[in-house]
Length: 514
Image 1 (tube, helix red, strand yellow):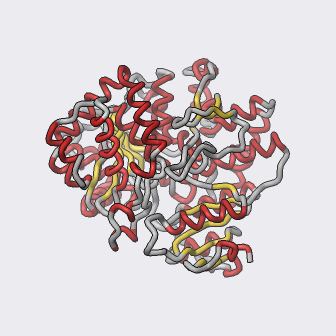
Image 2 (spheres, helix red, strand yellow):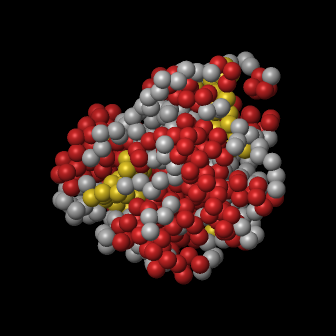
Image 3 (cartoon, helix red, strand yellow):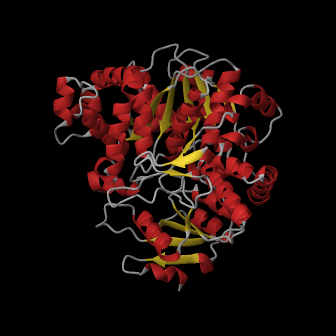
């Protein structure tokens, strides 16, 4: 196993201290991805995996050979240390929050299937509201911590401070994991952060940097300030996105390994998987995990992959159609003439989906069928797009700078390139749903399946219902959903103001450590 930049194809050993490719430029960051050349993965399937799974071990332990941090530990004779470390970190998180690195439940959601008019036995749900702080995001950060701790064990180095940018309550899991592992954490959050989340963060020892939104910027101000701090102080990104640090992906890949392996054991492979997308860290991990399972023949085919956003903020859909236009211009795929003309205009993704849905559906299926034969051409296009990422993956504030955007969870799909490729090769495409559909989806989930799911955690169901209504998903096809988030946390804690910094637009970044 090694790391590689999919854009410039530079290779790096697992022991590198690079979080992303140093060939990144002002045109866009180059991520690093894991490349598997290890026959060990083939050897452990299915016997060893099934034995560990049935023993109810932590997923880090069950799928350890799938992680770069374990392979790195193994390379340097530290495999036993790694297994002990992941258990001790999980136990420490449990002491702090009541939950460690858990394997979340999986169900055949027949009551919910009835609500959205599909047959029993065709809807399967992964419940991430059971995860630490009710969010899948703890998984990303657990992967990062295991990578950092493995590097530290090998190189005998001191811990550097961590930095994260985030909105919502999910950042609290970062505080728990950082404290459990003994790291100082700086969290760059909006100045209107939920008061309860702020109190909890400061009581875990996290410095909360409350960032004033700069209305003249076309990027998230929290992200801009976070980037400044990484450069100024040489801190380590503690992020949910592979765009920032490659190991964030492998922590969340465990979620999909759990999901697909469970489907394998019950002999019910998925035909369709719908994932709600913000910054796209989760969707990216799901895509890479499913592609590896396909490579290992744990699944016979990739589920058609659909990324779902809402009408309030849908930069990924815009990016997908820019990429589709590029494939058409290169002659890699023949677009329907009317769709091609529409994409050459100053288009809006909701208009494209509303007026050309049939053509998009047929084009997506054709690309996926041809993918094995045109993979080289697709990869060449992806490399070009990666070299010019900022032209194809724009911030929502740049695309649509209006008041509704200010409330969006993520202005940019940081891991969007991997998601777009996953949709292309699997036959999926982006979906956009309105707020009323999401509210209805949340009501249906609460009534039938999960009383704690949040509105963002319900977006996937809204997308699936849209696809059923539009005959994109056919009755009898097996569909997979993930309930990704829980409603707001509750706490009686008070904010420790010693751990709060107000960072205004005219403040220097050095104020944080003044």
